[in-house]
Image 1 (cartoon, rainbow, N blue to C red):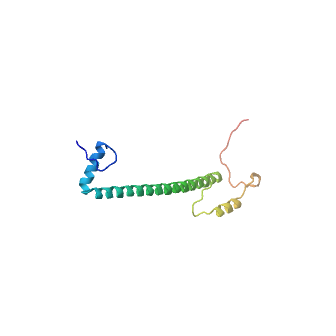
Image 2 (cartoon, one colour):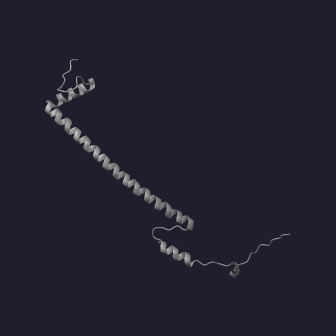
Image 3 (spheres, rainbow, N blue to C red):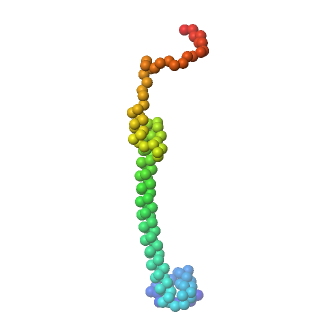
Amino acid sequence: MDKQQFNLRGSSIDEELYIHLKHLIVEHKTYKETIAYLLQKDKDDKLGLELNRIKDEIRKEIAAEMKEELGLLKQYIGEQFSRRSFATERVKKQELEEEAKQEQIYVPDELKVTGKIEEEFNLDF
C-alpha cells in the first residue's frame, strides 16, 4: 500500500496509525478539520487528566477524614467497653459521669438479710 506522508516530518509511520489518520481525514473531510479535532481531543484529554487529579485529591482528603473519624469512633467504643456502659446519642457523657458518682457501694457487713433459704443442706466437714 502506497502511503501518503500527510506532511509529517517522519519518513514513515506505523500502519495502524496511518489507517487511523486516513480514517480521521475521510471523516472530517480536510486536514484542517482533522487537526482541529485532534487538538480539541488533546485539550479534552488534558482537562480530563486535570479533573481526575482533582478528584483523586478530594478522595484522599475524604479518606483521611474518614480514617480520623473511625479512629475517634474506635477510641469512643473502647472507652465505652472499658466502662462497661454503652451510651446512646440520647445519653450524654455528663449524665454517665453523674450516674457513676451516684452509684452506691455496698459493704457486705452493712447489708441486711431480707429473705431466707428454705432448703436444708447436709454438709459433713
